[in-house]
Amino acid sequence: MSVSQNHNKFLSLRQKYQTFTYQSYSFAVNNDVLEAVFTFKLTDDIIFSPLIKIPSRKFYDFDSLSASLLKNLVFHIGMVELISYWKAACPPRLIIQPHTLTDEQVLFWKKLYFNGLGEFFYLNGISATQDEFMDIVSEGEGLQAEHTIMNQEAVMVPVGGGKDSVVTLELLKEQGDKVIPMAMNPREAVVRTIENAGFTMEDTMVVERKLDKKLLELNGRGFLNGHTPFSALLAFVTSLTAVLSGVKYIALSNESSANESTVPGSNINHQYSKSFEFEEDFSNYLSRFVTPDVHYFSFLRPLNELQIGFLFSLFSQHHFSFRSCNVGSKTDSWCGQCPKCLFTRIILGSFMGDDKLKAIFGKELFDDPTLKPVFDELTGAADVKPFECVGTPDEVNAALSYIARNSKTPLPALLTGFPYEKFSANSLLTLLSAFNEDHRLPEKYLTLLKTGLKKIAFS
Image: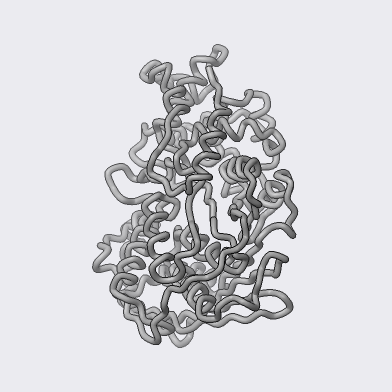
């Protein structure tokens, strides 16, 4: 379907479905599992009931947590979860029935929905502004932020199964505090990452998220579909598990590259909810309206993709077990055709041998000429970057320039014709010595990260 057809569909659905309602949420602890259920309504016949489950762990305290704080946290998880369902028809009016939101809260949510759906709007040809795309009306009692006791000397690390969370886990293991992995709907690569880092799944905060199947049915009937800000959902869910366990620090693995727009010259960013802008907005919101006692930050924010790639190359126990390919996620494989696969091959190519990388991906990706369009998107030769969690063209070109200069001739298909002479021979070294000062790392974790960076010795 063309962009114009999608836009017409958007207009038609938006006219037909004028209102979306967050009706209610409920939660209870049954058989040592905290279960929360949300109810969203598009029409009387289209009602969604997604849920999350949090199995008990020895470090949780389900009983002593303030009931009002638990309500607040669960309600806010529903505020993010509803995005997946609202976008099916994009009704212009959103009614929040469980609780009243202040004007400041409404501004936060409108910004998150609008920017978090930037890719969705762009790919569907939807023209909208942050002020006009949705009105939010709220009802019910207000909720107040409150303090809670955070008494575990530990740091939580969400694990996604890719190279970034590997680096965070391994570097944080070297400090004195306890590290607790966290995983939502853990797939095989996530479990391997956790176990290869020396933890067990019983040591891990596990959250089970279940989408309502009606959403998939609507997609099959031609309703709108597309990318949503999953990391924003993760932010609120990890805040809940942090409070349940008394763990103050949540250490994400989002790098500085996540701040760059996917579409140059715009605010459209596939990684918006991984950006520093969202990290700051969320942290301020959490402190003002939920609890000021959780510290949410990205441990890798000062770093770029090349620095993370170098550090990952040091942890050989993870080299054949990690996965970053979304296409192959259901089969626990690298598809060898997507931007994530090629980007990962490029970034690691400066620090790991060709034979090993060929064994990891199952083939030499640089020998595949069908990947040229993806190659052009990654290098900036195309107008738009891939809508994937990939690094900047500067990082890609620095890595490719180094690889091409140090490759045997003849060059592989993708590197043939790559203008590596345009890029400084020192560009890789320059990026490996960079440090982004826009971050929220507590001092002790900043010191630990800088100590980890001393591992980078490259020539």
